[in-house]
Image (cartoon, rainbow, N blue to C red; front, side, top):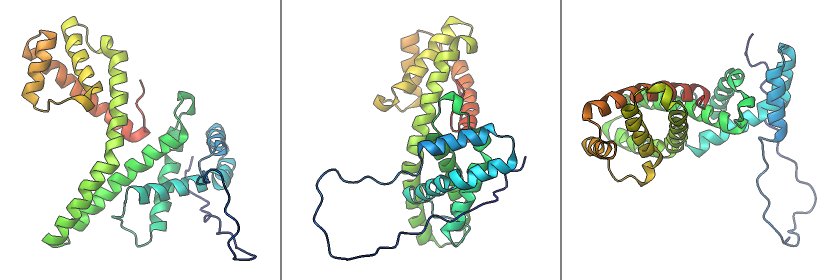
Length: 258
């Protein structure tokens, strides 16, 4: 089955303003909110797309009801997180690349799991742009002088703060839930589970944690679990492997299968 993007309609043109330009009387009431581009119809269209095995029908659904929400999502991600290190001269080309990537990931989305389409594709699109942006930053960094490199470093640090903070938070939430539900399968010995549970609690309370030194964390875990350091080391090594595996899954799909 080909996921080649057959249709790439441009966004609707701006409406033509006619009539008098004289300002009318001010209207009272709540301020009008921005028009939503990811609507219940978008969710329904994605479900219909996934349920269909006919490629022509899929292409039609995508062109008429999914392309524009994906276009606006790509546009908002690029400008919100300032993903401006590109290999293209026109940002419209970058938006098109993001749309094609989201199209490739459509079949990975599982609405029956309860994940919202907007949340899923926002994460997938942002992760794609983070990697894309950082790769192009490294290429450009080799071509600029020292002063320019210093300036770009500031931009990259800001990107790291703004673009990855929520991503890491979402992943850790998935990770702690996964550990809670699979702890007895992962660790058969009670003392191993005690260490695992203690580490998981630290993850859950990470925002209030004031200990950042590795040695201090080991002492803290040893005190509350009353187990020897080798046991802590063994458990943390296993959790480190799990962390890498689940993070790869999170980057690929936007969630972790608990």
